[in-house]
Image (tube, rainbow, N blue to C red; front, side, top):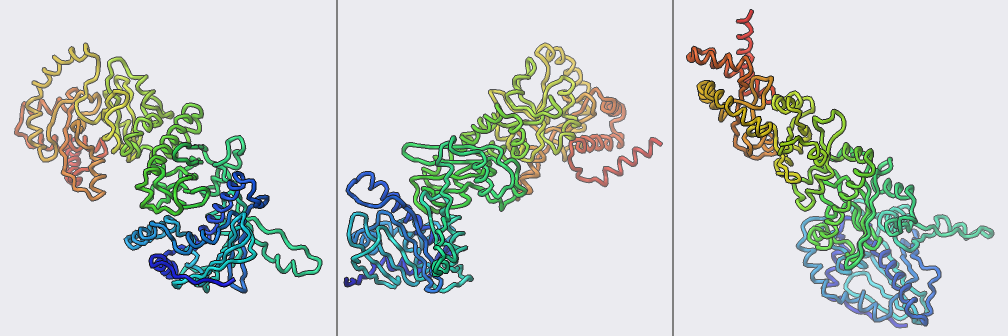
Length: 639
């Protein structure tokens, strides 16, 4: 029958030119789009056949077929699905008659990031046009189920297309691409190659519900022989969307195999987490907690995020918008039913449905960790050892889940040399009259345990949390309390231990000591004024002569250094020098100051005392050479 020639709309012509001139660096997505369209057509036919008994369509072997002809350089994607009528071809493919086209073009021009432009394809129903990235000419042959005639649509993408009615056509749709020459520099590969087709289908369409078949290589040669039977076509996709099947239908081995496939890990996952959300927004999630941390987990280039599918069609490998950064170690798949194909990362960050998924997935993972803590303590211990440092990052920014993160966190403490403790367990062990949860940050457990700040707490048997991760310096500043109990650093502010009765008894002695040492304290505050804001008597020291503490609301020296390393201009914070009046060195210095206050050697002794306190907490001296000289001189006098 005679063919009619039509002109594309202006917008459609602009879109075609963009496709022809390859605005997308990843041209492989054309096959994903065609397979996805074919899968949709098969879904529609199955549904229509259930609704309409008189349709007369063959639904016994619904599938997608891919046929490659190397000599003719053509690639055909064929389905036996619902097909299209003549009018549908004109409406859906000939004119792109939808209001989204102009918006698509506008966003495409405004997008500066290459990943954003790639993400826009398919978003406005223009996925079919991706074929022109790799083809000089595209032919579509289709017949709608229940109709007797078909329609052929042909275009080279140069402004016009032809449509003709065909007397005989198989049910469904076949899209034939007359491929451009191979140009690997422009990422235009040989799409008649069997291995390339397998790679694309495995990557993007492995979990499509319907079988995707391709003629086995060498099948044509085998068929030419007189006695050789033609080879069976090869099914390229697994069709095993494990997340869409009920738990009792899937073995642990199958889950573990999927985890290894998507994570490139050789070991089984520590935990498998399933989630099925139904209602106004449907999606399934299958998440995995690895058994060990990857070596690059803390590097800037770490590839985080889970795989995003839409109706079993692969969209992106590392969708960061679905999980918060502190859960970046979690691997898995999320399959949404109501998102459009190829949504960009930019759109994902703003999409309300994605934000709801983000919230629910985070809560689900934290809930699974809590269950693991209660029911599988050994596996929880492995998780915390590998990923505890990352999880604690959530205490800084995820205010909604802060309590949940604290509930699944464990910390080293003075209660046990080996086993960590939870905050809940700490609170349950608190002594009578103890009001706060005490902690101390430092580089190692040994350094913290040997710190002078710990002496009074050790003497009274009060438990102290030992926090040695760099992130601990930051989150303790952001989390004021747990279960109504303040978190207090033992190296900050005044320490007021003991019962009310003990405090009253000590008050008289403290006032007496304060008067006795008033002269020394005032003199040392003046002498060390460039380094400290105050010199005072300590209630936290029992063995050491002195220690340095921060005011209650000041940042710690470690945090100050961290901010400076990040390029932030932090004003230098003076700290407080505390003296132990029960130590012979301090009492001797006080006596000497009373008797011979003008002795220059006393100033050097005060400087040495401050330097020792600074070194005891792991600090750095302003003038190490001068400190060494003073120590050497003192030692020389003792010989």
